[in-house]
Image (cartoon, rainbow, N blue to C red; front, top):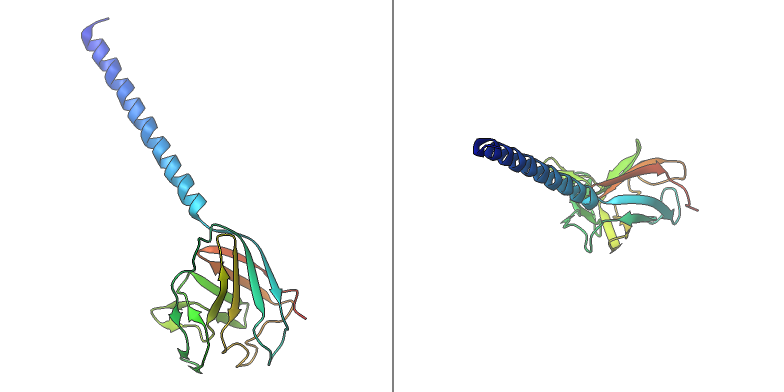
Length: 166
């Protein structure tokens, strides 16, 4: 085998190795990114449903939530009024939507939802939330069994139907 042919084979082998290494690194990065995405496996509700009652407790189970909640901003002063103990707004990191009735905890450059979210406890596999004091203060700003909902915790998204309230 000539020296030129050996060099060509070596160059081809090195190019293939570099390509495989880059592909493997990309696959590992994609896998790591997917592993970093939180996963919500279940959501449960406890407390009383309907108007004029305290916020129910929302327990979110899953994995990958991290050890601490994201930073929120105080949500006591909103476009709907001023409240005490109204929880926080968390941009798109922690929010709740009751289909067609209200949203809580979301904020963007245009402002925040009128109802804030309070984090009661937070661990890598369980998050416990309640709504701020604006909950129940306007027409149908409360949960009822049978309401459709969606929520996001650290970009893990889950939805279903509210149940378990007395």
